[in-house]
Amino acid sequence: MSTHRTAVVTIARGRHEHLRGQAWGLRRQSRPADLHVVVSMGDPEVVTVAREVLPGVHTSFMDAIGADLPLASARNVGAAVALEAGADRLVFLDVDCIPAEGTVARYDEVLQGVSARPFPVVVCGEVAYLPPADHPADYRRPGLCDLADPHPARPRLAPREVAEDGDVRLFWSLSFGVTADHWRRLGGFSEDYTGYGAEDTDFGQRLAAAGGSLVWTGGAAAYHQHHPTSSPPTQHLHSIVNNANVFRDIWGWFPMQGWLDGFAELGLARMDPSSGRWVVSH
Image (cartoon, rainbow, N blue to C red; front, side, top):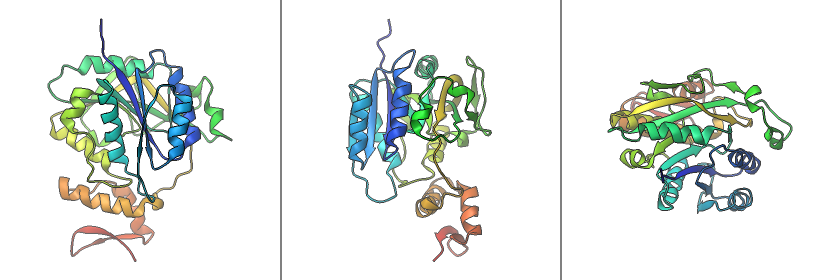
């Protein structure tokens, strides 16, 4: 009989009602997680809400000042807490995501199937996007799959289907799973990145560099609760420009090219021909 332990890890600042929605989904799992870990990035109320809605949750509080959230390091902290508590499978969910009832069970099943591979494997489930609602509590009801629209650039799979995809640039941290062993081999997320942008793309490149695989799986859906956004995300201008340069220094090419071009069109950033780097316009 298996004695493995699966942890769900979430990082958050603000989005308290979205966290309540995620917890609603986690409490409805056909195979509940053995551990829940919530990392607060400078927001004490995240810890309060997590303890209210997820009894027995493991919480961690990180200092985070200003708009540049420590996304990469927060995920690493969450994984460390889960591993210290005995988890050997990690499922990461963005705070905005509500898991379908079978999501933890499906991640658990697929991770079991890839656990013996000699190279690291990262498993990604489908994330579909919910329409605007009057209040996030309106999402806490069955039938979310009928409301949500799948991402057009990600695979759409049948519930029992898996697909190995060589394009690691498609990796996203909204919803993914990895065994503890493979997580350790990858070294987690690079903390060279501060704030928003490029840490996911870097993680995918590290997976490829380690000879690993990105595996998409059906049956592990998560439903993204709507919130206002902008494209390009001008609120993250400085961190995106900085992280794009950090990424280029490591991997030799610029990620987030569409956003960088969008900033350039708005006169907010430009490519400096003398340095070959992006700079924020003044």
